[in-house]
Amino acid sequence: MLATSVENLEQFVPLTPERLVGKLNLDSTLADLTLFDFAIEVTCPGSDLAKALAENPLLPGAILTDSGQFVGTISRRKFLEHLSRPYGLELFSRRPLKALHNFTKIEPLTFPSYLPIGMAARQSLGRSPEFLYEPIVVEMEPNVYRLLDVHQLLIAQSQIYELTTQMLQEQTRSHTIQTEKMASLGRMVAGIAHEIKNPVNCISGNMGFLANYCQDLLELVSVYEEEMETPSDKIAETIENIDLDFLRKDLPKLVQSLVVSSDRLTKIVGGLQNFSHLDETARKPADLHECLDSTLLILNNQIKYDINLVKNYGDLPLVDCYSGQLSQVFMNLLGNAIDALLERKEKEAQNLNKNPTWTPQLAIATELLNREDQSAVIIRIADNGMGIPLQIQQRIFDTFFTTKPVGKGTGLGLAISNEIVRDKHKGQINLNSQEGIGTEFEIILLLDRKPEVELRLDEE
Image (tube, rainbow, N blue to C red; front, side):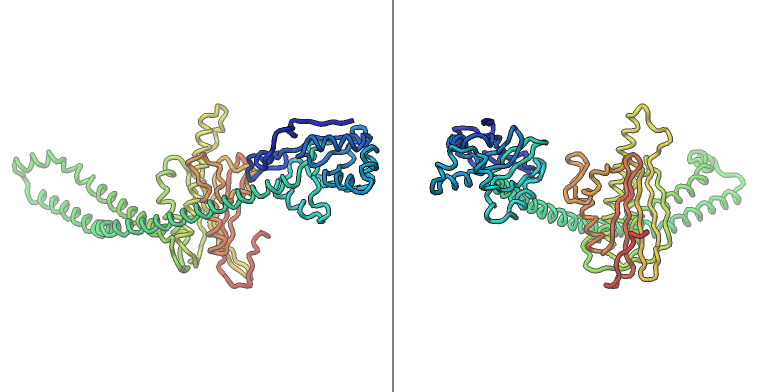
């Protein structure tokens, strides 16, 4: 009995390699290829198979069944090879295919339909040369089989390879562009910070003199009032117009607010300068708390109205590092945490059954870990946002992987942060996240960088 489906065979229509393989992507599996649905009972004579192969020149072989149950395969190559032998036509064309199957007895290579194309190609090429071009059996579901031409599989693997090469080139190009952009941004910020720093220093340096001068003038006015028992009508009118009593109370407050704002502006400029050190060529001792605070100053506009900021700083020594690059890491992690909190806040506002006790919180903690053979600084940045689903946590540091909408996330922030911590500082960055609870990133930086010292903090 012959069972065949012409849907995949496309009889009488020439099939090019492109039509056989179709449009693939890096995640394509065997199910995305053109699979041949052709089965024949082992009780059928060989002439039936010969006729089917003649009518379907692209058919790589046949699935052999016994009472509908899969028993093996016979390839076009092996079948024609045996027919072409002396007396082969007489031996196998009229006799049941079972005889030929028993004579050849080749164990078919069987793959599940969900197997990635690249993995299937590698395993297929691992066969002995004798069986290298035998068709592959693809199991679509239990007891449902299809045939795959090895030539088609190799064409598909070539396409996957080209796509992979293209993707790697694009990633390298994008990474280079991102690095150049960050370096340019660092230089631009450094220039702006330098230009701002001079007038800011002038304002900050003169605020003390301004406060003293105002105090002296107010004291002078008080002396005039004591010496002049009866002020003239013009002086009395001026005192009333300027509301002298209010001015005496408000002027010191105004000067003090200017002093505070001047100090804040000085810190912001310092933070910009720290952040601009992206192209440092050597490690230098740096205060990580200052790096964190500088980054928070830059992000303050996003934090101050919506998020409860909790800082728990330990007693840290100066750390030998690239401070600008670590500031970039802090910027990426803090920025992601803020985005997660604002996203959950928006969802909570839309949810009628929202959690009334939830408030957005960003927590930053640092500590010094001392051991006999090593010391390390640990920085933890945590939020109580939506958390990261478990199924994507393994990919969170992959280049170009992002869960943000198109146009908002580049998929480079965490990848670059991971590179800075692991490659530039020989440190470790860990993720701990639970859906619905929040996310914590932990950065571990060794203080003792002796070559023989290993980073063994996973035991904690």
